[in-house]
Every structure is written in structure tokens, then in C-alpha cells.
Image (cartoon, rainbow, N blue to C red):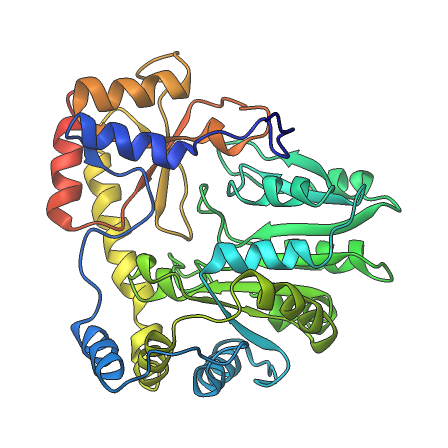
Length: 380
């Protein structure tokens, strides 16, 4: 039978490709964004406890109420804002599912969606699946700042959604107050919905502050905000996240969510709910990753790569003009095959594969892993 693909241009993701090559060549894998160290043994113990206690059946569709209440407490403590646990919070099967459901419940054929590139790779395909039109705005190294005048020109009567990633993967850039001010100005008195991907919200460095859109009433009223326990708890394989949104948006979100996954595994929700009662378990993570970022940064100064600023996420981007003028994809492949280190070429995060000679390394790894990788990179 012949079928017409709904995503004819989509193939295997660059993350899968590079991780497979890393395994094939036994390279140090700094490509895909996941830790190579264990999560909290206290948390693992809680998961085991609730599994053995019989919490192995369906959780409520919107998520365990006690976990939603912990999220309410966290949002109030960190961002001085209140979400109603019954109607404005839904536990999801990871951040990507929450992103997909947010797009699915809003975007119709010919709706336009503004995204900022380099961007996480799930945004554009989800928009296209529902007939939406992606309007990418390219950001440029080394600072990846947003030209809001360009955004203003892009907005028109068909603009239905703006997708933001703060802190940004892959660049590590975080939104500043001026960005927030311009976003408020450009969306005021419009029907534009904002999808704010904030899965790296706790990974903020160098004295910066995470400016969640939930802090700003005008933006909160039109925003889906996405978070991930995988990033927060060093357990990406558990695929548990959540979505925050005002009731009128959450009502539509849950219509998709209930038919997409219905609910998320119950025993892990119980475990996370207990674990978050101690706020140190989420307040101290930024200090941990600040140390890792600084450790990797100082190691990389021994190489010929030029390090770009990283104020958030667990990715360090670099330019390599002192090393080569080859394409970023070519150099990334060569690093695996000839030097034993896997990274991600940042051109993969652009619709047009725009190549600014930038590579992305993940530093959410053991110190010995980072040292081993840099010992290889020094040889370039």
C-alpha cells in the first residue's frame, strides 16, 4: 500500500544518530542530553516503596493531587504565582508529550506558529502534523539574542502561537527582562497563545534568574508552561513532566491528553510528591550544575574551541573557527570517528540547517566522563 507521509522531511533524529555512532565507535557521549550518573537513592527508594505498596494502577487523568499540590507550592515559592491544582495543572508523560498536547489542542490548518531557531526538534513537526505553518526566526551566534522588531514584522492575523524555550536548548541563553517586556507588548490585545518550554528552569547560572512566564499576569493568562521532572531529578528515562495553564487553556489541553496517554505511572508520581516535600531537592540543583558547568568550561579552555556563553540548560556550545572551516555535521562525525567524542552539530536545530560552525556538548556527566572527553578534544 502507498501512503502519503504527514512528515515527509522527518527522519531519524540527530540525537539518535549521534548516540548510535557513539556506541559504534565507543566514543564518550556528550551528545544526547541525559546524565550518566544515578538519581537520588532516596527517590529510588520511594519509587520502590510505592510500587511494592500496590500503587500500580491508573493514576487520575490530570495527575496525583498531592503532586499537583507540591507543584503549586513550588511555583508560589519560586515565582510568586498561584495555579489551581484542580483545574490548572496536569501531570504528563514527560515534557515532549506536554508540548505536543499543547500544540495539538490549539493549532488548526493554516495557523502560523513562530519559533526561534536553533530550537528543540519536536516543535516544528508537531505544528506541521496539525496543518500549522512554521514561521522560524533564526538567532545567531555568539549571543543568540532575539530581534523583537523582526518578531513584530512576522506577526499577522494568522499568528496563533509563539513557542519559546527558556533556558534555551541548545544555546543556553535565558530570557532577560527586556525580552519579557517586548513579548508583553507584542502580544497585548491579541489572540496569540504562548507555549513556554521551561524544562531547564532550575539550571540557571552565573547569578541569572529564571524569568518564568508564570511571573507575569499578562503572559500567564495566555501561556502553556511546560516543565520536566526528568531534568529536575536526573531521571530522564521516567518521562514525567507537567503543564501549567489557565483553566480555559487547560480544559482544551486535557481533551488531548486523555486520549494521548490518559495518565502517567502512579507509583513514580507518589514518589516525586514525597520527594518534593523537602524543597532542598529542587532548590539546590542549580548549585550542582553550576559546578559542573564551571568544571567543564575550565577543562575546555585547554582546547582550541571557542566557548560561547551558557547561562542555562546543561549544554555548552562552542565555535571552532580556530580548528576547521568544515561543516558542523562533518566535524561532529569526525570527532566521533577520529577523536572518540560525540556532540551535536547545532545546524540540526535549524529548519534550513543553518551552519554557524557551532557544536553542542552536554556537561550533565560525571567529572571523570568530562575529563576523559576533554583529554581527547585537546588533541584536535
